[in-house]
Image (cartoon, rainbow, N blue to C red; front, side):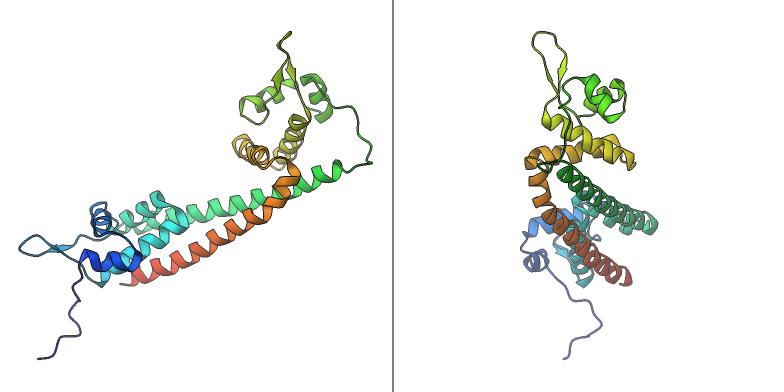
Length: 239
């Protein structure tokens, strides 16, 4: 007696889990969370999965690598609820975030190059601004603007223990110069604060310049993961 090739092949949770190095419980949890379609049950309560569930799991895991667990789950939930437009909106939002990150990288690379060139030994430099008034004058801004940047986490000046006045050092001036460049480019204060924090963590503009290649590679990897996830998503929808 020959088997029917059109009949869906039954799979166990362990069968789906093995392909991805997961536990069977993880697969059951993904189904419970709506990331996989509901499984049929045997009379004794065991789950019966098919190739459709295997495709859903491949799609979900590809989406996780591209967009993160939360967005991947939202996409799969939307698909299984019949809200295809909501799923596509989440995908497009992820692409928009990647584009913004690329634009930020380009802005940081240009700004770091500008600041590095400005700090080349032998270039004429004026006295280092120490007070908020001196720094505001250097940047042609108001002290109120610098206080707003401080509140946003962009600047972190020390305080004179005797007077309580802000005292800016070379790192603060560097951060202010970079913030001024990015602000003119239309970047929000929250985004600028994140970039400045990356420079602090890297140890200065020279160290950050050396780390930009790694940042670029991470963005490339994310873009490639999105392409792979899109292919998996298209295949799943075609089922």
